[in-house]
Image 1 (tube, rainbow, N blue to C red):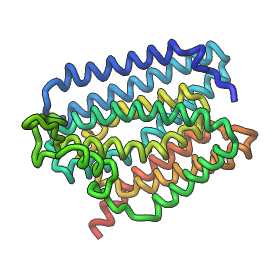
Image 2: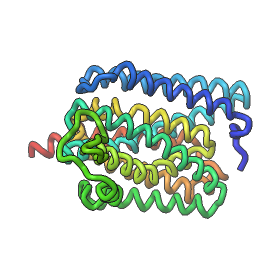
Image 3: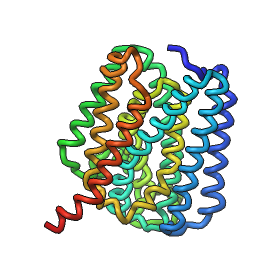
Length: 323
């Protein structure tokens, strides 16, 4: 399947976008978070607004460029595909926030060090997502693979809705067990360091173990989110950029919602419904609508499902607790 933005022709864009991301990350860690500190609600809200504004500004610029290059009809479709992809990734990434909260609670990570863990966790996530997307862009060229991804997403959505969350069990995680076999782990934190040297022996800290679990959780979530984004767009450029913008805003979103995540009781059902919808889209709906389910309808369904689950959480959950 041919794309509008082949890597051979648009390598310069990927390079420029990568440089922009690295510059923003350097600004974040090197200037605004050079010293470890607890991220306030106001700071988190400011950064969340910045990342969302940057994503929407990119969407507008991308829409304009695509319209000028490929015509108004294709430009509108590609612009809406980016917006839908960003919304899917942003919605599904909320599940990561609950894992972050459980990891920090389990390992008793001090609030002033949590940003550092998330920074390097998301840096690793960006690399992993690039690998997943590169592999996915090749796999989605095969029809039966697309159908298989669709079925997998639909089944995952049903499982998310019906099977209760068991929480996390780091002691059973293979990655963490491997780290503990490779090097000793200190009993306490060593300020914001992941590894220290004691008597000539490299020793990991609990911060390193927490980082490993954050990275592992992103691999698990990427198995759902990357195929889900491919359900609304077959353009690797759209899939990659929408993933990057959603991931970059994860840290600020976590600190923004850290104290109120318990209120979103019904959000998991909305996310489950999104997975079922995009799974059906890949496995059946695209084919039923002549190869491409209307992107405007997809965007409306996804926004409606997520919005309804958030609204239900805010309105119905408090009444249930009071009853």
